[in-house]
Amino acid sequence: MDQTASVWLVLLVAAIAANLPFVNERLFVIGPRRERKSLGWRVLELGVAFGLTLLVGFALEARLGQRHAQGWEFYAVFASLFLTLAFPGFVWRYLRRHRG
Image (cartoon, rainbow, N blue to C red; front, top):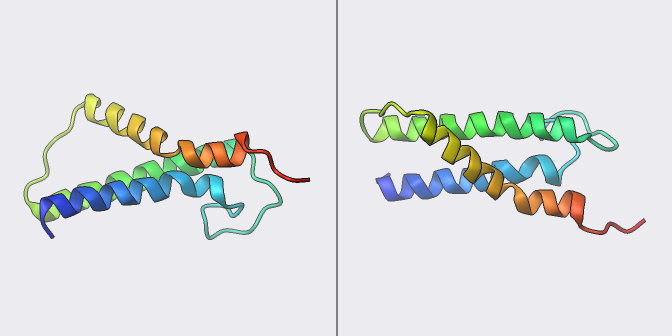
């Protein structure tokens, strides 16, 4: 897999992982189904998904060659991107009018 494909794969994984806490009612996607998850559970799941997405990115970078050390700026930008990718799921869950 070349570098361009790895970047697109990480972006795809990030977009899916960022929206998963908002589109289902299961704990961490595979846990027991809850009647309605609280925002705290969703934020916790978002943090775990953020960490797993970082691990996928680091693994792909290590596979392509030597992994580079990252400063705080990298993590701040990646967290901002991850939260931006989570916005459609947040809108669907909390800002859309649900019937009933």
